[in-house]
Length: 344
Image 1 (cartoon, rainbow, N blue to C red):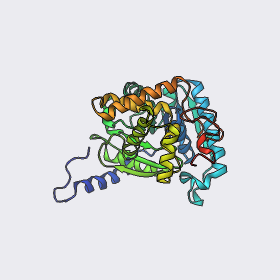
Image 2 (cartoon, rainbow, N blue to C red; image 1 turned 90 degrees about the vertical axis):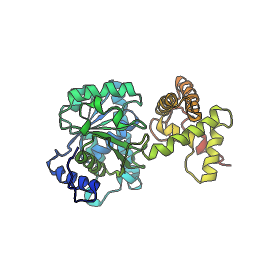
Image 3 (cartoon, rainbow, N blue to C red; image 1 turned 120 degrees about the vertical axis):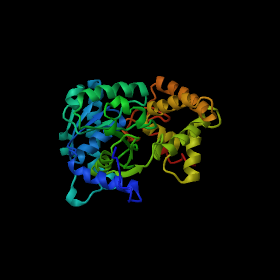
Image 4 (cartoon, rainbow, N blue to C red; image 1 turned 60 degrees about the vertical axis):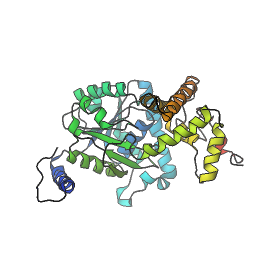
């Protein structure tokens, strides 16, 4: 942390930020990015970073998961050609042209942590929302990554301070949280903890800009940042209406879409996020809050999603409801919400 600010300056916070900005000139520039976890968001973060000109290594535990990610990257490249000008994160000035084919060439795929992290300048952790898993992963990453490498977590609802010690570099660790999908919902929520170096915080804010995200500064630790502090209670209430027998998933979505004029209902959002991710969030916070009504709802919802997952219902994998063959809260392709009579 920066210490001993001038006593004559009425704003310590402003002084710290200015000092941090000056220190950025001595901080190694981010050139190589390691993305840890090749799931839904790991696939998107790695493609967006490569599209923005960074060399990227994508790390996961199996070749099968990496092959799936590579196929997703090829779909993203085709999507860029089809609708690039309509996607927020892909609308950039003409002089900053983006090349999806060049992006594909910048991404390497590996199951070797040393290969992925050995020369990385920044890493984005995207492993499951399970504290024990994240703690173990951070210890492995710290052993492999150079000392200057900045560690960021894309955790949905957990705090950086929960894992700062496990990273072995608490001053160079903070959250950079992305919405899903990141291409259309292009925010980067930047949240530090008590020991995060201010210069590192500012460097991550700049990195978010460099990959065409809109940086959102989270000024104090908050489970769920802004985005998920709004989203998680909404999904919990919506799914509780289903698990408690009040209404069907379709009717919950219809009600929301008609009354709020929204393009998607909460069940559609659950399918986009992925049922496993939503289940992990509800299971963790349900245990934390098990004595409260909201916690009991979360545990019931997690049990419901467990049954769906066991039945092979994981949600949309490609992000395209017209072509995806997966199952979730809806059956794909051609889910009910795409039919002309869904809203009556």
